[in-house]
Image (cartoon, rainbow, N blue to C red; front, side):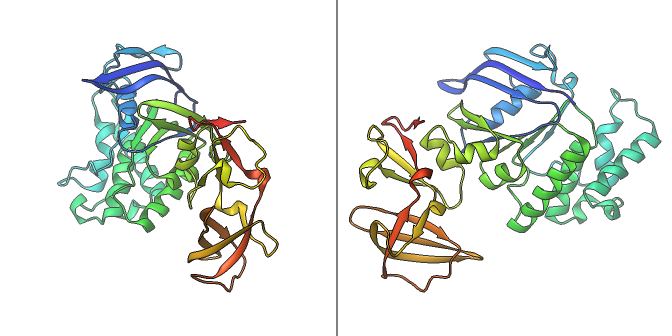
Length: 336
């Protein structure tokens, strides 16, 4: 596996600036996730690394070797697309073996057999090797699609929202399996998604993209606890962070701030609390309850693990853990 370094990457598609001065370092053996909405530049980043798109300016390095003029076939990347990329008339075995049969690899039959079986076992599809792709379920097809990428040992695996077309249960299963496989193989993976749960559960580090600009890089915990802007704060956390005007907070500890961010778990129901509010809705989330509240001066959500005997329309008192409040300026940038 390799480390990957992007240096001052810029690319335009007509009048659209897809990536702007992108600087990104992906470490050898790292599971790196690019997080952002549609149009943020995630897929463009993958295509530039693979060589499918050429940047207008900037440099691409694999292990300090410049790759700008290297053709895609010789960059040795492995790309997993959002939709299944299988040969329907091939068996699962032949689909997995196909990348290893490239004339560039010159792999013998035993090497191919051993590698296919290893990946099939990791993906729990070893009992499907003789099945045609058309005989598989959606989850099995995506496992094979992942296997086609994993069967090789490239410089980097590039994954473009490969789980987005699956149902919630299958996504959860494959998130766990994919992270375990990455650890077992010590693979370098760049994974792009708009799904914050995928990002936080799989990533060693996350990069948050906004309109082609990399706004923050850090571990999931760093991004969650120390976002550098309201945009980043809104990308991570479920339920979403409460964003309020600073003037709505009693005795604010930062008079220069325009906005504050408060995570729902940092607001508590407290009979001696500073805020009188009315409950709008309650939603049971297993061991926790999500409470939406509103008053003339403040509204938002709180998350509690306590058993609460209140419902819609009830009046309660709440308090905010002021040590956890995040402050933002008029440009929605974090004040530290």
